[in-house]
Length: 232
Image (cartoon, rainbow, N blue to C red; front, side):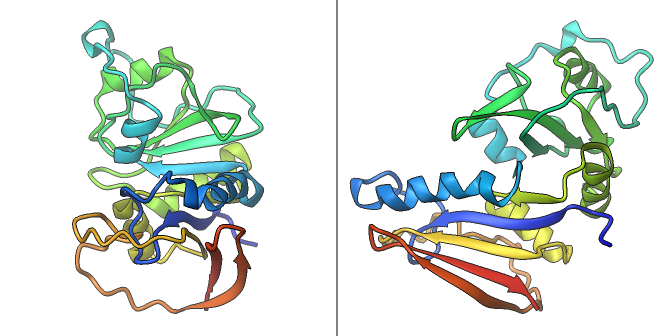
C-alpha cells in the first residue's frame, strides 16, 4: 500500500496550454470553468498550490511578524487536533502566505489551511501560524522534500489523494520529483496566443523522461474537453 498521498495535477488551460490570460472567464468558456471547479473536490478532498498561487488567491494579507516571538519554537511539525471535510495545502518554502483566516473559501468549500514549509521559514512566522491554528509541516532544510510532505499529509490528516492546481513551477517540481500519478487537464475552447503566459508545467527547461497515457476524455458543453492521463 502506498504510504504517501497520491498526486493528481488538475489544471484549467487554453488549447495552447496557457493557464491564465484574457480567455479565462469569457462567456464562451463558462461551462468549462464551472466544470473545472466542480471536479476539484470530486477528485479529492484536498486542494494544494504553490506559494505564488496561495499568496495571489488565498492568503493575501501581510502579518506583522514583529508581534510574534519564536521563543520555544523548534523546526518540528505542529499538528493541532482539528478536523475538516476539505483541506487547502500551501507549499510555502519560505513562509510567505499571509493568512487572514485559517481556511480558504473555494468553490463553496471552506477548506482548512495546512502549511508545508522548510527551515527557511522564520520562527516568528511559525508562531503566527500557531496563533491562527494553522497546522504546519517542516519538510526540508532549503528546499521542500515533497515525498516527505505527502507521507505526512497521509499520516496526520488521512489524505489519500491530493489535487495540485499549480502554479506551473510547483507542478514542474512535483513532476521532476517523480510524484505525479495522474494529470487532469480541463481545456477551454480558446487559444491564448500569449507566449509570455506560463504553461501547465514549468520544469525550468529540464526534460523529464516520464510517460503518461490517456485514460479518458470528457467533452464539455461549450466545446472544451477534459483530458485525463495516468502515469505509465
